[in-house]
Amino acid sequence: MKSKYMTGAKRIVAVGSSSAVGVRDDDRPAGVAHAVVRLFRDGDTALCGTDVKVLPHRDWTEPTVGVLRCRECEELAA
Image (cartoon, rainbow, N blue to C red; front, top):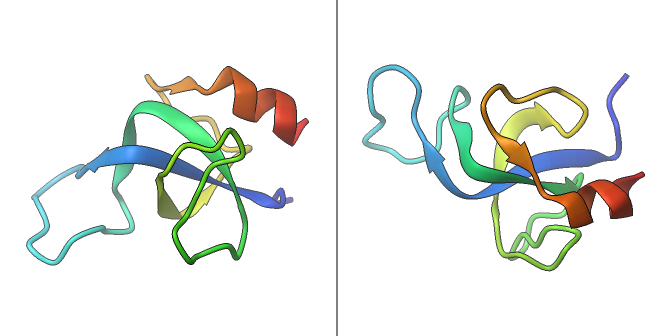
């Protein structure tokens, strides 16, 4: 079951061959993962107030290997 939050990150890295057109469905967060309210698109901001890019089709409840979660977002999304 999906949560009401998606995963976002300040920057992204592509997995596999790099994309010339921008964000791809298989991009993963780099650095710290943040929680973003689902369906919020205009100037995406995480629950903690950090400006982020939302990762398509990536629910906040899905674990992201090797990436730390923002503690403030975890508390606010609980």
